[in-house]
Length: 109
Image 1 (tube, rainbow, N blue to C red):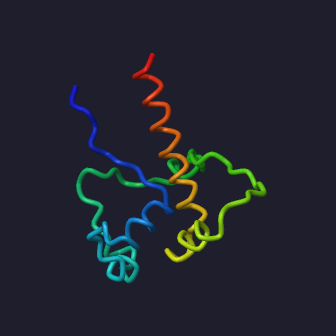
Image 2: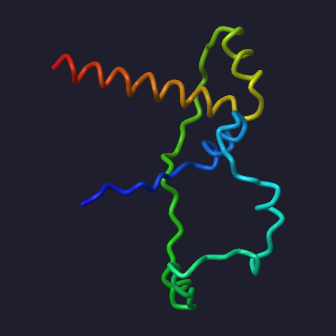
């Protein structure tokens, strides 16, 4: 069975990608669109009242913890220079570090 090519991103990840110019989406055009202008194509089922009654709102992101953390001023300045979302970017860097450590640990085992 072929692997799915569907990729999911959080809102923050999409905003960061857009900030870095990694998206080709014309967001001004998308934001200006009216519901009637959106072509959902023939693959999408008709949305019914029953679908809405059975809908469940989920949040796949893990909750975050508030902590006090001492970080060198130049590190904070560097991340803040990237604009809004600097804490999210710091979290992403730490996550990648952990994933690399786990990968190295698995190779060593």
